[in-house]
Length: 167
Length: 167
Image (cartoon, rainbow over all chains, first blue to last red; front, side, top):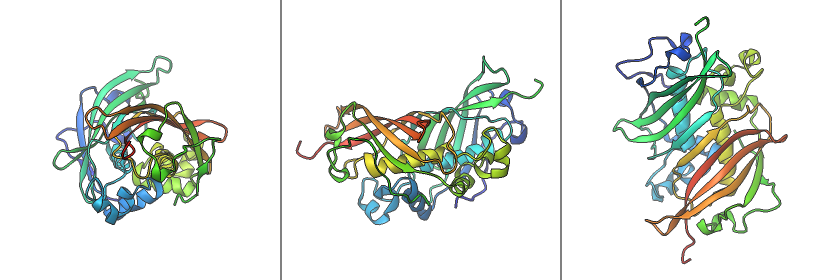
């Protein structure tokens, strides 16, 4: 169970709290960091058995002889860590509508057991909807980084976010 | 626990079994289908609490009043179902090297509790590596479909796959 409490790690963060944060609060160019989370070996194996049953995620003995010299997390579990921090700190708890998807999802390096990671978010684009002026789309550069600044996941997340009521 | 046994649903499948399948066996244009899997409401809530704590994934009572009129799975858990079928049937158990990532990941429609889904794979591109001639990259169109053919996830998966030894 991924239960760690995370916090803001960057010097700056949104001024608007997550439960009163709207489209207007996502300012292009702003970068924030949140963390940290880690996966125990058991977490990696449990997730792998359910969702990504390849031996490098489910079998520590085999993984030790495999291409990465040890167990590594499923890239989809690394995405889950990203999302956990994204929900806890970044995406509005009141204004987030559906997410259309993610572009250019990459796993540049493996995530190993007990490695702490943080999430770095950068607002890349914020654009009002033409057809529905009560909302806009926010494109966010995401990077999950180890303590030695190795990126284990990068991508571009998209979110539909409601504008502040009355604005 | 996602434990269902899945099977080949399409009329055709790879001729090479998954434990003797190599780069050469991924033929551009070939389409196969595998399934089925479903998520119980409890599976959705458990995953949501760990990896995507938004109320539409974790709180059935709130979700009933929310934008989708009920609980829906985290898009990352839907990706996990995709990966489960991808590992069980599609990606070689012996020749798969790292996955660089996924492009154009989309969640066009929500996945609700107890909805069965299947995976459709289409080989889009298969290209030998120039720098490492013992492997190639396979690009695969993926779609997770409900029984009424609603796509709940689409994307383009990339895999590095070893060529058949001695070929």
